[in-house]
Amino acid sequence: MKAEDIRAMILEVIHQIVPDEDLSNIKGDVRIRDQIEMDSMDFLDIMMELRKRYGIKVPEEDYMKLATLDGSVAYLEPLMKQF
Image (tube, rainbow, N blue to C red):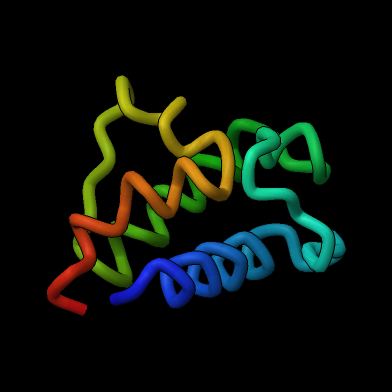
């Protein structure tokens, strides 16, 4: 999966978790939770969705690497090469 596909997938998952949020202006280098209304349970739901869809387990100590959209793409890209 390419970086732009991963970005689209992340936004799709976020939209599924918080459907009322406008994701059209999400900046890649700003914490996602600073841009939209999303709590820690929503973030955990995103992690669970990644596991369910792609079998990707993100260790809790790596959660901060997924705080921004750009960070999420960079973290997930090597893990999603087979998709």
